[in-house]
Length: 273
Image (tube, rainbow, N blue to C red; front, side, top):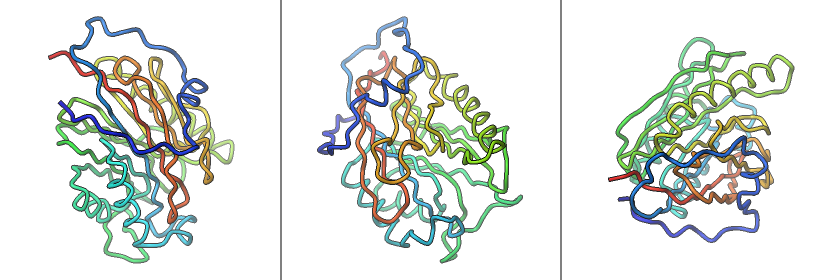
């Protein structure tokens, strides 16, 4: 079984199911068969690192300090999984190597081709990632059916050796009416993706969804980084209520990117032996 973790001291910005209550669409029924054993800790850290070199946020991102800050943050909080948006494949490989985490990376298509990260170059291609402290045993990924603009929007889910499914996505910005409609459509797709296995296994999600309203399926709790000083309320975390209990969140300050980290803790109800 997964070793229980002692969570880091929570900051005053903790939202103890505060957003989970405000954002939760519906409660889940208990599993038909009660899982054996007592619950253990599960934690997920969400980071948006703005690493492409071409995004408008990049001038305020200090490279390589932002990568080093991510490595330090993961080491300090020791989450069971990490979701990363706006990443570069080479930087993720370095983060995984230095933290000892397994990982999967999904490449985002930009103007018809993979985007080479720049300023500096040699950092691989642009995309999103999920890292886990256990071994990854399965991967699902895909592009959303609804797309608008130059940057493809994708989702990624992995399953670890404790049968926990961890997912991320980076949805379109929602500024104009057309962008908002695209974001809404992607949100509906994400709801379906998370919901299809959410009652049969522990499923947890975190990502930059570029919206205040949640995309969590029925039977999931939802919370956000609404207490963050940077871009509040658009990074969300969701979890399946049947398996992930008593969620609480912590805002993790980040100096070298335009989003703070969102750290979510929950008690994991283990599957029946």
